[in-house]
Image: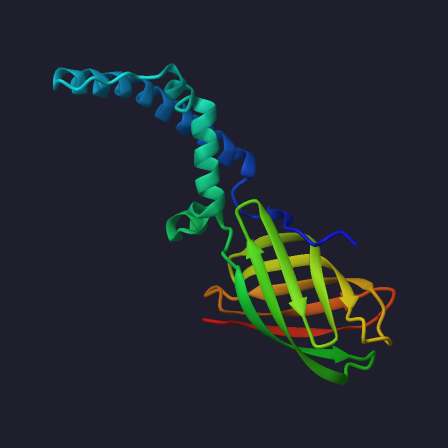
Length: 212
């Protein structure tokens, strides 16, 4: 089995990623032009102070628009998208971290069959995401996801996952499922439903509480 990895996720109701790319390109061009103008001025000033400084031509390749774009995108992908003013504009919440989960499996009559607990770990960047849910008997990893902005309730996290039982849980079978979680505006709690397909054929509810 291929080791689970972060995957791309869609953003619904937020700023289009292509538009963000264009803004970064414009910013990279402006910054690059400024650096190309400023660096020779700085070098000339330092030389007038009596310091022998040579400016390697390779330096200018690192201040080209392409290189600056890569640096800006890396900063955005790693950190900047989480900054309050930016994520509110992009409408992409930071749901990364560890969540305590309490779940209920419900039968066709709406009655609770049994309750269970799990730990949910979310790894998130600007362009990729991974959701790992682990119980005592199995673990699941997301393979696709989307985050939607809801101006009333907060945010909606939708994801598709594969569940693999632990080797000692012989009565369980690998299966796929889908989950829809509504995340509160304070990003500290979530509530939703899950549906499992062939191999489990169950459904129920989940409540998440984010650990501080």
